[in-house]
Image 1: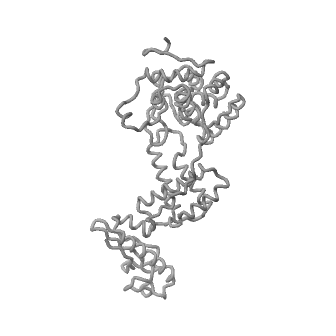
Image 2: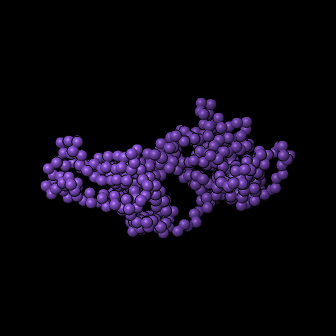
Length: 406
């Protein structure tokens, strides 16, 4: 491997000859990228490949070369295997600003979402979160180099945000910055000079979050006191269909309703969990209410900007449920958490069946080889969940293998 800077006399521009970087990894992997500097021949020492004092940018170029040659020496001494592209990024990338790389990651995530999204609903996804977090750091410090990210910098940021942000919020910012930082290292865009990880010990201790589920007794209240409001219908539909997310019911189309079942791959991230749930009477009534012969969707949520409408949904159901004396903490995932909690913690139903109903990946070898539960097993558990909120006292339901009415 050979790496050095040189003034290329074969190219002449108004500013002079360009200062270039010579990178030779192998006969098939070599590059000669340009830097932003130029020099006239009479202002350059070709023996040392350095500017003469007569050069108008003598100090700037001298400092640049001193810093880059130090990095070259470290790179050669490390004996790490790198490609010419990685070396170029490490030495003279477009910027050593982590913000530039962060913005590149946002564009990549947006492209990934376009290629992989299972829904027509634009939630913004991970790219939106990255963009929001980047704005927070830019507000805190206008420019941020990779080399600026030290434990002290992170601690001072945490100290500043602690006056307006809880532990979970601070950890979210830190985790996003760490993800971008680590990705840059993996790609060879940045090579830290210290082996010490600046993020070690910086995360806030996790505090138990508020429970976001309703009890059986609270769900009974909702069932007995129906509200003529779409937000109420969204909440109940999410529960009745098996603890679906708000994004699920927003994205579902009529094509996902097949022979009395809702069938789709969950509309979330990279998950490939398949939902195949029976549509019971209560859910069907809500679907019939929303039916629009001119729409492909099962609800009108798609007509609105997703995130503002989801936030409005949360605000409105909190207000309306409070009027019914429901005190549990509510957010957009509450129907899902409620379904999971009632099934597993209050009714002691089969947790694996509940995971399959809600599309929770089980990620264990045993589950991979077992396959899915048969309909009569899944539907029995599902119906018991729905039926429990309809009766004044808890009853144990019994079903035969072939129907739900015996």
